[in-house]
Image (cartoon, rainbow, N blue to C red; front, side, top):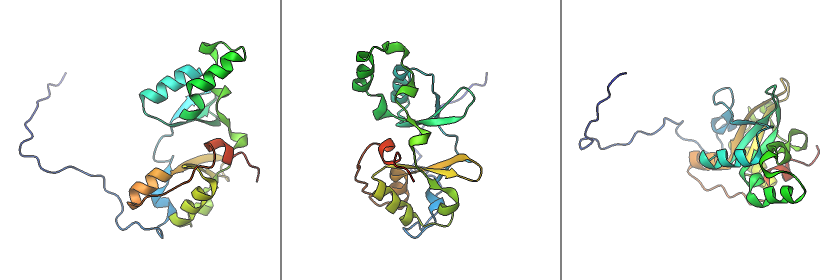
Length: 185
């Protein structure tokens, strides 16, 4: 094992910050704000994981949303922290389910009930277009799909957009994540 040394910090004055593209504006490309799963691994959870365990894991890691996959690794839905609150778990128990065995799939939003933006369209869109879509849907997040290759390509987050633009992005939530995306095309 390598021995590491501790050094004093009295001569250190500056913090390091990530190198982000400068001059981002509402007219900037939407791709500058996009979390691309070709670059960032999506956070996933198995559909058979118990809701109690999923809730615990999400709280411990401060994660608000995970993509749900089956044993074959195929995308089957999304679960958000609000789906796994104690009250909803207790409701399932009152229906006769054993608390420790209820799978996360009982609480997730199935992919068949979701809508998303198309990667081909956002590749030529401005971030203001994405913000307008988020505001119209009333959602803080929006999936982006590559319809040609049948893959979830990434996601937009209102908080990430706000942070990069250094502007407040006020999304008035109309419903939970899954309700907006449950409308048919």
